[in-house]
Image 1: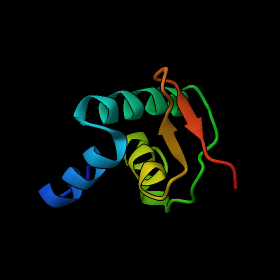
Image 2: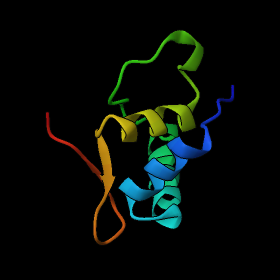
Image 3: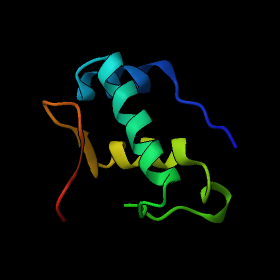
Image 4: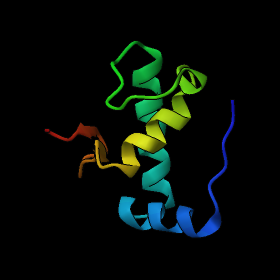
Length: 78
């Protein structure tokens, strides 16, 4: 259950999040929410159903989550 991001894609994600640390905090907090049973904000195939890091990264990539100024996970309104 692993996936890879290439360097240019990672750099874009860092930039969107406001840096490596902020992206790490966001993903770590979102993964914790998913582990505790929070619903997924995107659809994933069965292969990634329990790959919470993959889900959190994909949610961030499509703009479903972001980190607030006080470092809390904020879900986007549809």
